[in-house]
Image (cartoon, rainbow, N blue to C red; front, side, top):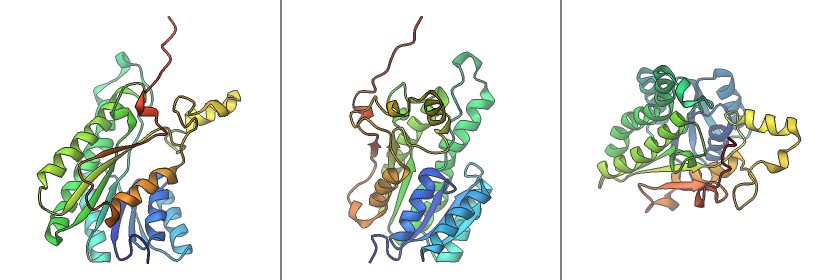
Length: 262
C-alpha cells in the first residue's frame, strides 16, 4: 500500500519542476492526481509519464490565477475522482529581477495574481468539499524568499511571504474542521523558474558554486521538495498544521549574502 493509497489529489504547476515531481510521486504512492498547468504540453508530458508507470492521472490546462479556471479544475477533480483529499497549490512565477524603481503596478499585479491569489483561489474552492468530508490536506509552495531578504525579487518575495501568512491564517480559520494547511519554502532548486541562474553559472564554468551559500553546500532537486509535499499530504502528518517548512539545505538559518560593490 502506498502512503497516499486511495487519496485524490490536485497538483498545480504540474507541467514541470517541483509540480511534476510531486504529481509523479503522489501517483506512485497511490493517489489519483489531477495535474494542472498553464502549459498544456508540459502537463500532458507529466501525465503520460505517470500513466506509463501504471499510475492514475488527468491533465488539465488552466491558469491557477483565474477563478473560473480554478473552479473548473476543482469541479473536474470531483467529477473524475468523487472528491478531493489533497490540494498542492504549487503554481508560481519568479517575475525575474527587475530593479525596484523600474517595477510597475502591472508587474507586481501579475506576480501576486499567480503566486498569492492563485493559492487563495484554490483553497477557497476546495475547502467546502474538504470540510464536508471532515478531512483534507492543503499544501502551498512558498519560498525561503518569503522568510528573509536576498533570496528573490521584491514582488516574488512579498508574494511568498503572503503565502506563509495565508497558510497560517487559513489553518486557524478552519479550526476543528479536520483540514490541515501547510506551506513548503524551497531554497534554490533546479527548475524551469531558476534555469537562467543555472545556465549562467554553467556558461561561466562555475556550476560547482551553485548553492554554496547554504551549509549543505549544494542546490536542491525537485524531488526533494516533492518528498516534503508527500509527507504533508499523507496521514503521517496528521498533527502538522499551520506551518511553513524550509527545505533549503539550511540556507534560511542565516541567509548569508555578499553586499553589492559600490
